[in-house]
Image (cartoon, rainbow, N blue to C red; front, side, top):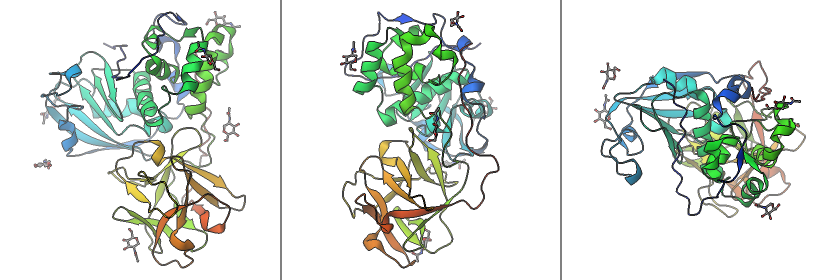
Length: 386
Ligand SMILES: *[C@@H]1O[C@H](CO)[C@@H](O)[C@H](O)[C@H]1NC(C)=O
Ligand SMILES: *[C@@H]1O[C@H](CO)[C@@H](O)[C@H](O)[C@H]1NC(C)=O
Ligand SMILES: *[C@@H]1O[C@H](CO)[C@@H](O)[C@H](O)[C@H]1NC(C)=O
Ligand SMILES: *[C@@H]1O[C@H](CO)[C@@H](O)[C@H](O)[C@H]1NC(C)=O
Ligand SMILES: *[C@@H]1O[C@H](CO)[C@@H](O)[C@H](O)[C@H]1NC(C)=O
Ligand SMILES: *[C@@H]1O[C@H](CO)[C@@H](O)[C@H](O)[C@H]1NC(C)=O
């Protein structure tokens, strides 16, 4: 039995009224999406047993659910796991008693979610069949069995949470000016419309058909956030080393402090986030540690590595190539660039801090790919409405 109900907790102060919009498909999206074309290459993964106290939380398996909207829906934990995707998006998996999808089925469904969207998800829970699937920030609960597109939809809510898309004027203007939404569920509010729209790739030729013009502004805006264009500079499956141009020191960390030093450790994976932004996460790290601006807003502020990965704009970085093999690495939240304190030139351990954006060599880093994957990351992704 496959449910097609989508549900998401959206605690919006105001929610946008879409009730008078026409719908393109009245029977939901599942029949009209070819998900294998949205995600032609599912991510590889391994699953390992974990002992996660977080699964006892109210947003996981807790029988004493404290959330008034979801009271008494919880059940005890059956088992807890890590899903380790080869694109570095570790996910905590909580399987509750009475589950319908086991850890293998959950991991497989999540492997269809593009890494750029999944990078905003850090925990998923499987509960017995109930009323739908629901997302709380970076955590989602699936009550019963769902198709992969529901996993894309729910993960898009986490992406929206991290990137704050659906509350932005650019999105509200787009949906306001479009005369239709994809399906009845998208009428619920601006966040559900975004999650439904996100399951499609705006560049898809089929969607250029005049029938879909009434929805074109929404798709256009969604495409500027949703990174379905995977012709990317970096492949998130690669474990890279990042070294400072001026000191040659290797990006590393000691406790939570980011440093460069000459120690032969410190391997990172550049996980795609919103369009043209990456997360810089420690390779193979179960605690999902990623470089984070953590509220720092000034030059010379210390940089931290932060758990958990959440895909938020504090964790998003642009890589600007200098054309000579180096990159300036700029944080999306504060607009500041990575540098060594005092522009250190020795490879001995130094603290990594934020520097004012500029053009000097102190801001440049090399991204070394010790074991490049054989296939390039550019995978053509198109959704086909069928
Ligand atoms: C799991 O962790 C809890 C404490 O966090 C501990 O009490 C329990 O024994 C652990 N269980 C296993 C199977 O390791
Ligand atoms: C988890 O569920 C399986 C069956 O689905 C059962 O065999 C196992 O005992 C359960 N484990 C726990 C700890 O509840
Ligand atoms: C249409 O978009 C414009 C900005 O491009 C905005 O000012 C206007 O409010 C939008 N209309 C609706 C109905 O949302
Ligand atoms: C456009 O899409 C509609 C609805 O799916 C379909 O009936 C029509 O044949 C399509 N037109 C073209 C030219 O593909
Ligand atoms: C995808 O991204 C690449 C590299 O940034 C760019 O050259 C290309 O034009 C993009 N393709 C589309 C369809 O936007
Ligand atoms: C360099 O970084 C590594 C990894 O965090 C750490 O173990 C080592 O102590 C650091 N070395 C120095 C000299 O700071």
